[in-house]
Length: 303
Ligand code: ZN
Ligand code: ZN
Image 1 (tube, protein in one colour):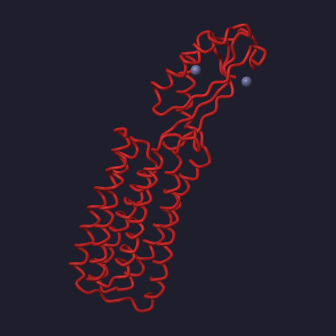
Image 2 (cartoon, helix red, strand yellow):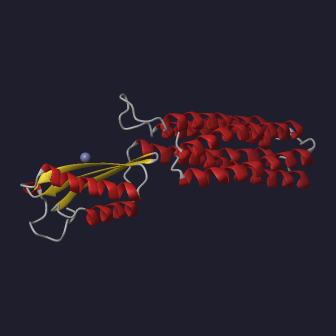
């Protein structure tokens, strides 16, 4: 087990524990007050527990080494958990909207509002700290599952703050309809956040290329290390979780030996590996009649 894997897996495990604790606090806050908005917040925290479990599973799978059945590795497992998380978020939003509809005409009067709000605020603080950790470490370890989990939790923090502020307003003004109204806003925000998580994961499942900046960097690395070759063309990249797949055609003199062209390939592969973690490069070597650019133009130009 690599250091990076252990770090991501440990974090994913603790995410489950934190999600359970936060869920408990939010349900206590709801039971103390009877608030629709706090109920919506608590309901959403069930999603967090399931999502944290799914992310933990996906991270275990995605770090499995390549095998006969999956020779390119298992990196994409994390996208599935992110998509599942998006779907669960959608379900939570629908449940909240149903609860809003049920309470709209006669909004409940809150019991013990201050104690309930304090408990909910405590849960929000725990969430905020945890979301920050997940987004930071998930980003540096290139773990879509952790980042999705972190963003989701951060969205919960934003809605919790809105709910707490609004409920303070409701208690102060006696305008009880604020409670279901806030719950509705929570639901809409959750839907939006869920959509973003799904959209970014679908992109990954669809073999999205690396960013334009990264493409330029890759071209520079190849150019700087392909001395002896005539041309590089048909560069393609795709991202799968932590892994970056790169393939391209390398045009060499038709009479160059296989071992000579292999030396060039190895040099380029080595340079790419040094600069980009988890890179898989496949180079297709071609004779000069396959060149796309006129002969003798610049040193290893891209076609
Ligand atoms: Zn070609
Ligand atoms: Zn080789």
